[in-house]
Length: 385
Image 1: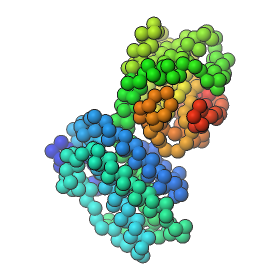
Image 2: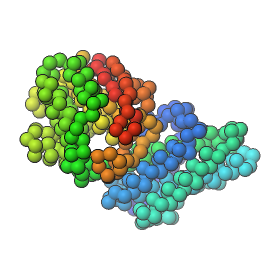
Image 3: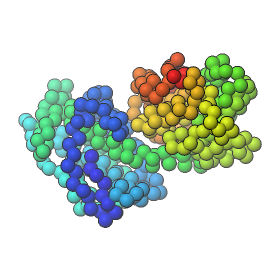
Image 4: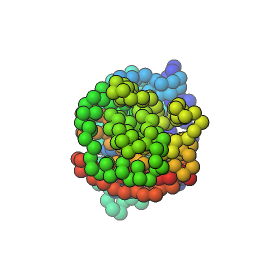
């Protein structure tokens, strides 16, 4: 990983050796190299590139969030060049016996190529093309070539397989670095189309009704429920109709405004950073949490933090319902109730279970259902330890 430049564009030399990510999980971005199947390297690179194209559309993409921190634009330029460099290295490994890679000073490149002054739209196009080129190379690696070797200028040795996993970590880690930009874009999309979303989701699907009924049967009568991602308020009404007390919250100011206009108390709340204490019952933990189709917008590395914070806010023995989309990686979608880009983080059953169990919850049930557009969902019912 390259340390970001200061505002005067100087870059501290990168002296760290990141090859350790091939042996153990990255504690910052959550990447686990051994979980990456070589037959999905190309697809994973393409999925990652699609997210960079989206975050580059942010109006503040060229603005550095803090002193010494790259902007989304600068990170994107770096990721584009990472794809180009790794394509060269991969080609040399497939064509030569144990080639030595040419040295690449990524910090000097950022200064010489004036990353901060480049055009976001041009960078988005170049990044997509570079990602597609190297992804195609991974797709076409012959079955017997994954063990071919190459050597970096500092002496680090790679096989084609470990080079691909190391490469993927680099771009995944940098997407983690700009995850807040992706979150802001998603919130902005909901804000812009809050009323359309409300109208498009007014009718509760039968499968969601069944999950509401299960939740109501599980929690104590009259339970105080913290709802994360209330959206239009549809689920809260159903829970209240069943006799529960619901605190409506959402990260979208547009949804909160709609809820208040409808006569409901609602709080603007980010479960990753904001105080989760119930303002109506200070010092009293919640009996349960309802988080339907909202945690899928939380960055992968942040979900364990959110789940731990929700556990702390819930009494021992309390309950939680959550639902997320099933799959690998993350996608940007303009389908569904609103035609605006939103980031969805996809999960597999076992990893999702590990996150919840590690955050202080005991998973009682983890099921599957098909969505209205054929997508697969994971439904989880858990109890606070």
